[in-house]
View 1 (cartoon, one colour):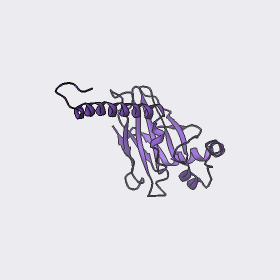
View 2 (view 1 turned 180 degrees about the vertical axis):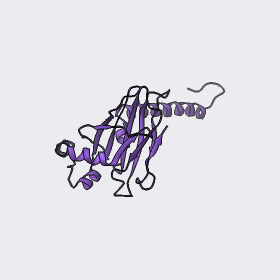
View 3 (view 1 turned 60 degrees about the vertical axis):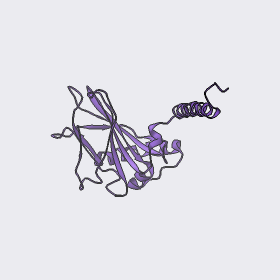
View 4 (view 1 turned 135 degrees about the horizontal axis):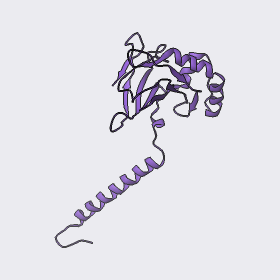
Length: 195
């Protein structure tokens, strides 16, 4: 329908703009509905150190690309996540020991006692081995600053890197996710401070 004083071309442009907005809205909904998750962002080339800071504690997880961790431990993780979980369970002590040797965190004056939980498998980019942890410390409030040392995988392969991600920080309002690239090795730069 063409109104007096308008042209058919102007009406088509108006309709096309509405159709484009509708298509973008539908695409956005599909992306959310189909699960655009942090897992989708895993490249298979990086390790990740996640922290969650709460008023009374610190917890998190370390995620290693399974193929990289396998090379460090001299084991093989199958590509099927269920089979990889069996291997992770079988080598749980070795995985925790490797993690303990390559990861520390503390307040800058002392190192926190870190408790490492049983490893799990995350099906992303060829599987990741996930090692949940928590600081076995008493906190009066969420730490406002801490120091992390991590060189898992990157100590042996300078083509790899690692990211420090603070995904929950209850002391900061609003709580936001913050990401920092960790140094290539402890000898390059001994630690990364979060504040």
